[in-house]
Each structure stands twice: as structure tokens, then as C-alpha cells.
Image (tube, rainbow, N blue to C red; front, side, top):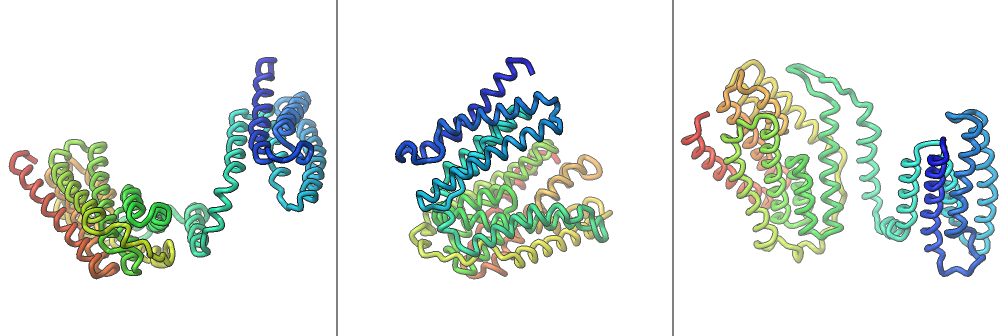
Length: 431
């Protein structure tokens, strides 16, 4: 590289050492000079040392040759051994067992070296990430001291479901009528678990009132059905007042209606004149119901301060619910196959019990042929109605009692407002 590039890479190497050194120096700022292994100056020099090692390695050949790799390995070994010994002596003097400074010094050396022989932007990003982790020591330790065993176990299960199991699950449909994709079913299970876990975290962090509403709004972006199932289980377990949990379902429902409008806007805007008024009316009713229930009808924080959560989510119940939705999808496809407009509406009713978005996408693609705009709008709204009927069923079967009544009232009010708006539009707008 020319002198300009060389100086640029050296500047990044020096900046890496300086950045990490500032954090390390601030951490030990009250120590007496000479009582610590490394501070801001030492880490800055480590950055320059790593950069110099990279230059020597590049001098042996570009791209990096075997000789260059050996140079880096030997220099790093010499530095790591020396620095580790110094950190060990510091720990003995302080009677501590921390290896953070030693690891940070080694990482600084390697990042600075990589800034010379690799992508200096990636090296800089690594340095920033390192400093963030080092600076968050106290919050991380406080968080770990408060975490419970079931919370850690649930988080690990969710991570394993997402990053270990998901990549190896088949992504091909299995069964008749187009089959069911096992990967999609597993994704449903992940969404259900994630919504439950997010709600658990939000309530613990923000309190029952604001946490429940925030988690419901976020969950509604993915699956209002999952929010309903999660809140129904909370209601049955006594983890929150039924009114507040139902308010969360209402908010998630409003978000789900908005998702349908957004999908139609992108795929088939011609349908908006028929379905947007009905969905907008339902959104307004659901939002009013949510905020009246949460903040004006005694669903607030003072009733929920003693809530005891038993578990962020139950793995087997989540998986069982996902399988049930898969069965519904299969039945819906069987009903809707090769039956024309009537079949599309019947299939939408069945599929809508599990997933409105999939129905909206598929129906939008079937217009104007073989479905007219009027048939397509009816099919989409049928799926929306069906999905909210499933919420009533979940509330009655799982949440029961006051929660089920609240969900039923919310759904009926949405049906009434949406149906009235659709009827008025049908009188003045030709399909």
C-alpha cells in the first residue's frame, strides 16, 4: 500500500488502542500510578504494536503469506505471554481473579493487526463493540444478579429454537393439498414464544400497565393471535388483571388490521376502496377499547403490582398451539381448493383462524382474475372476521372468565363498526 493508505491504517490501529485504553484507564482512574498493568497510554501503544506487526506481516507478501502469518503468531505470542504475566502479578497484588484486562489487551493487539492486514472498518467496529461491552460491566452484572433460573432457561430455549433448530428443519411442504411447511410451523412456534417472552420482559421492565401495552403493540406487528394466546395464559394464571390483558389484545388487534391495509396497499391498492373503510373503523374501535380498558376503567398499575410471573413461556404449549394452527391451515387449503370464489371465501374463513396476512397476500394475487375485486375484498374481510373469532375462542378456552368476556365484547364491537362501514361503502362504491 502507498504511504497515504499506510498512515490511514496506522491511524485506525492507534485509534483502536486509544479507544479501549480510555475505557480501561477510566475504570482504574483512582489507582495510584504504577499500580496497574495498563491504562490509556499502554493500550494506545498496544494498538501501535499490533499495527506494526501487521506492517511486518504485509512486508512478507500480499495477500497474507505463510511467513506473514508466522510473524503475526510469534509477535502475538510474545506480547500475550508478557502481558498475561503482568496482569497475573496485578491480580496477586490486588487479590482478584479478573482476566478482563488481559483479554482486552490481547484483543486490542489483534484488532490493530487486522486493521493493517484486513478491513479497517471491521476492525474499528470490533473496537467499538469491545468498549461497549467493557463499559456495560455494572449494568450487565446487575442484570445477571436479578435474572431467575426460569428466565435464563426460557431465553436459552428460544435461542436454541431460532439459531440451532430452525436452520435444520425442512423447508419443503409435506402432506396433501399443497401440504404444510415444517419450517413455517416452527417459525409460528418461535413467534409465539418470542411474543410471550417479550411481554414478560416488558412487564418486568416497565410495570404491568405500560409493559403489557407495549408488548402487545410490538407483538401485533408479528401476530395478534400469538398475543391473544399469550395474554390468555397470563389471565388464566393470574398474571395480571383480565381487563388490562384484554386491552393488550385489543391493541394488537388494531395493529393487525393496520398490517392488512399495508399489505393491500403494496400488492393491490385497488382493493383499498372496499376494505380500508371497514378496517379503519375496526381499528378506531379497537384502539378506543384498548386505551379505555387500560387507563380509564381501572385496568391500571395499582391492581397489578403484586403479579408473580411463573414462566416467560411454556415450550410444549407453544409448540402444541403452532401445530394446531398448522392443522387449520391444511383444512383451509382443502376447503378452498378448486372451488372458485365461494371456495376462496370458505378457505379464507378457515385460514384466517391462523394467519390473516397469508390470506391477504394470496387473495391479492388472484385479482382481478379469477376473483373480482368484490370477491377478493369479501375473502380478505372474511379472514379478518375469522381471525377475531379465533381470539374469542382462545379467550373462552384458555383465558376464561372476565378475560373471555372482554375479548368477546371487543371483537363484537369491531365486527359491528367494520360491518357498518363496509355496508355503507358497498352502497356507493361499485365492486
